[in-house]
Image 1 (cartoon, rainbow, N blue to C red):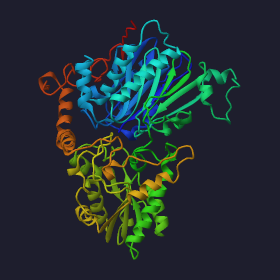
Image 2 (image 1 turned 45 degrees about the vertical axis):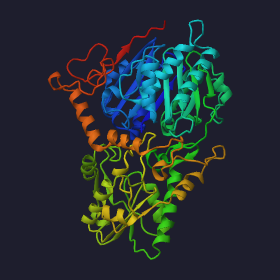
Image 3 (image 1 turned 120 degrees about the horizontal axis):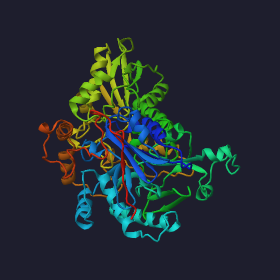
Length: 581
């Protein structure tokens, strides 16, 4: 899962660098593996990306060089490809115009696409990232359809962009939301035909509009689609993974990008064009966004994440009372942070006190995202510490958002017992996770899932709890759909990690899952991390084995600054030359 952000400001002399940085910081929960920003200024692209957290990747000298009034940013955790800094995004290709991509999600037909791009289009694929395939497919279609007689600010140019995205969507299968920055042309946001991955857009009157006291926009009325279509450089725009970034930057949420839709913001005029790029689109968002990934203050497809989690807690509590009407629960304790909302409502329905029994060290990465079973196990003790007085002599109900591999749950149950709990009951606001997710969430292999081929009693024994209760899948779906907005009918969700049913219609066979296991299991990920580490060391420690051709040992020289030695004149942010011919 990744976070993406795109900004286009009406004032040509303004800079989006700080706003992109702030938005990526707000979206940091969606990935802590790598971060990147690319901006456009005076016909040049300025790119900075590297492995690490947002606060560590971007230093003052980088920010100074990230000039321009429009740009895109990305935070990443890897589900496909490797952890190499070469696969940090945004990714770039120079033809045509200079195109960059920031992508959230996962394509399921990458082998087929890689063969087509390399052999059919004769384009170089430099990494194992499916994002690079999205970039090359779009760039090639754009190059084939564009000629120099076309005004890049015309409706004809917008039509070419939409036709190019239509062909991308026709070839790509999976769950994805993304942004294309087209140098000198504009910003494009797009979403897969099932709307599996989220992306929203927002707007606000530009600084010059406010300064000129433009009467077209009222503080009390939302900006309309017609006003955006004829903005004429009077509006600023943002597109991003979650509405929380729109709130933070002071924009107004317009709506979610629809399944199979593309939104194009023209750089020259600031006007917005939208187009349905896939004829068989239907909304089926990933329900795990509401369970775990999204921030509670976000709104996705018209549904408040916070309110959906309240519903999850309520339905979970009723399920507990149905299963254990004579339960002896003394106290309800959440596993920080995501489960707090559900635990609070569950405690209210159960009529038991809600207590904070674990204190979280906020400077440790989320363990679900952290690769490596041993790393996760060690991280739990670093991340959480118990308040022993809340456990001593009590029967405690622990509420978590989900149970994936069971490693974290097992350690938490052990910590509760060490703190003096008499009995430890464990509940999950989500149903049992028994299948891999193939659309961009690191739920990789059935063998590593604690619920795979186990009953609730066996899972309880595995994690050391007295009993385990999971959310019912129907209750989970209803938790979200019951609070849908009138203009956002939600009748279907991607529930594949719970149900094994994949909304894109693939017949996912054991062969596919076996390959997924070979690529994503903890041993394979550890080997890739070691390879990535070697790539940053001296030449004597480097190896060319298994690295893509031209990868510079995993770090692309044009976009990577290792902060070693004297900072160059570019400040570590390469001004990428671009030929418009």
